[in-house]
Image (cartoon, rainbow, N blue to C red; front, side, top):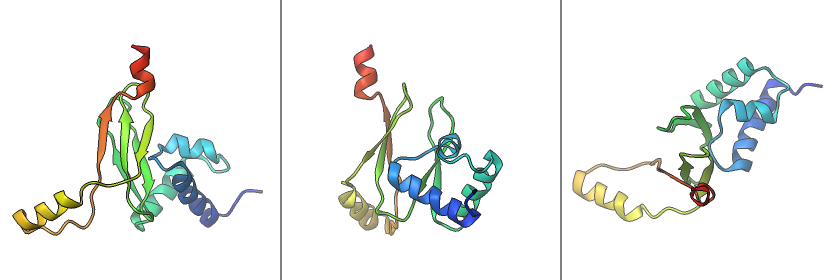
Length: 127
């Protein structure tokens, strides 16, 4: 029996929490293919418009939009440009930078998104 759409949406949020890294539409769909791909797109659009998830596009040749859950404390990401793996960095060292921005630019930072592009250790070993 196919889950209800609200359960499917909640399942997407749980999947994003469990994985802890941004996922593409295809990755989300492959985890639960009870719904067709267009339903996954609509569910993601709904979740993003309601502020429960965010999307981000990484500037590498994989070119896929990725989605992550906004409900938990933010994390930062590492993205390998070779294998396109994502890794979460579970801490934030930007508090001093945020305070400097506030003091020098009179700008109150409410949130930030940070990711680093590079080559992971597995891909580095292959070269």
